[in-house]
Image (cartoon, rainbow, N blue to C red; front, side):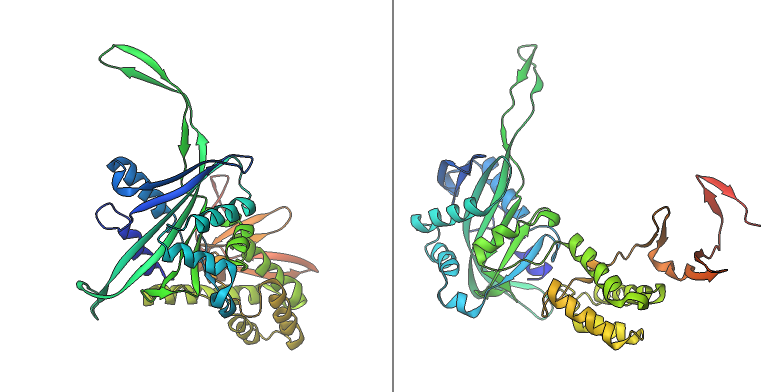
Length: 376
């Protein structure tokens, strides 16, 4: 799913726009025990509570594509009749009225999820009469293309708040408000089926993780029987290690600068094009860059083989996850130098009298600890 499709669904989660009739779920304690089940009509909730529930659901469709929001692709065999896909379809087709299916989903999440403290599972179902989008981008509300029925699940930590001092004007007195349990924004969640090309895609789901560094792969495996791509920070570290370990002596400053500049150019071109689909780069695209740098064939092949091991041969990465467009960092055990991403040309390496040096070309004033210095 792309950002526009996600934003279109997120805008629906308003009191006056959605068709959510019920919300059900459970409250789980730190021992992984269900201490409360709920199944409530949205129409019976007060307006303030309705808006709070919808806010939690909106957050499950927030963040950055390929970081917080990840497409999960089912195999054809799974869609044909796997237990995990069948369970999701039962919940969707029954509009959450299948009690056994709801209980099975809650048990699956609780058994798999590693989350400290208490939390709440919130599950809803919505029907979206998808309006036709004209060539000029305008939505024609009276011209529907299809009805998109989907599940939205949010897993929200429940934390104990703090005591607070309050002042009651009528009584002219201070009162202590006792701490109470508060439902926090979702830690994880999912949308099923996906809304690809503004249409139902039963072969895909959208998975949400609040913290990309802790994206709970154990939950993805339990719910979808699929592997989720590693977190962005780990992608970056792994990609950097692949370059340095497989290219060996060929991994010099010029090669790293070229790889980085090529990826940054892809990011800039994608942003300029305003294409809604997320930008990704394949292994073959990276190997073509390495070939352009004159990397020896056996080392390029070593990179390709290690890429397959670490990411998977068909896995495409987001360039934004593996390069920092704002700056480059030159680091030794004792020195760290940060340079504007647009001026990597100021950095070069050189061997002088048998010693290795990092040279920074100086075009403007230089300050050390805030003190301007002269170079003579």
